[in-house]
Length: 244
Image 1 (spheres, rainbow, N blue to C red):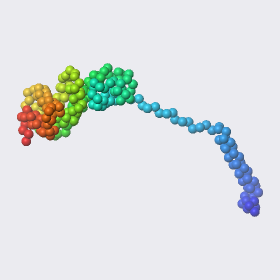
Image 2 (cartoon, one colour):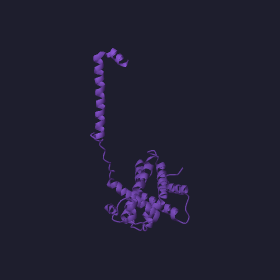
Image 3 (tube, rainbow, N blue to C red):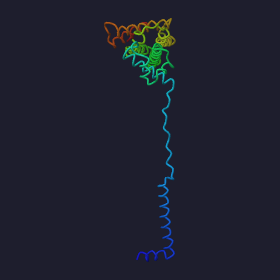
Image 4 (cartoon, rainbow, N blue to C red):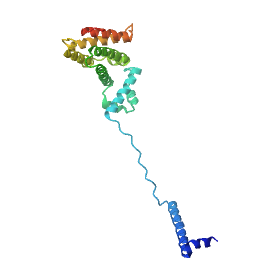
């Protein structure tokens, strides 16, 4: 019999202890079950929902400028409203006026940003040529100067031509500054002799800007590579360097 087998292994006292242990375990199981059913165990605490991080003022301003730029390119500045700019930037109309007083302010900010990016691009491209490769640096300025304006044609037209505003010579001088710096450095190294680097840089950049505008908006657009070549040849002649 089963009882005899258990008694044989544990003895009568052992069987009694084993049975009590089993009964005790069942009681504990029932107690735990009753506790769960009665709802005495507290639920796991839930993590509060994470709030989206607020954007910095600089990011808000960039969002408004980017939205305005897209709308200006699609519809033109005149047909774009402040309400549309705010909506495209996903902000209230009042937020627009925290950063800008008018559409004209946005256009001015976009113009400043364009100049900064253009100038940074020119300096970076010129610096890629070896330190004393002055001919290569002039060629790099000509190519990046022309292609940078050609690639930004529609935006440049809006910022500097289509929307009438007074000419800002500070912006013009800033765009000519990388060439002026290059001419000064070349003069110091003896690569050429330039009596007035500022005058020469203004002259060359104004010519570059003019021929790019003519290529973009004139009656007979010119081939991009040919335009770069002509600007490069003239710039090298001004500093008395041959193209070859």
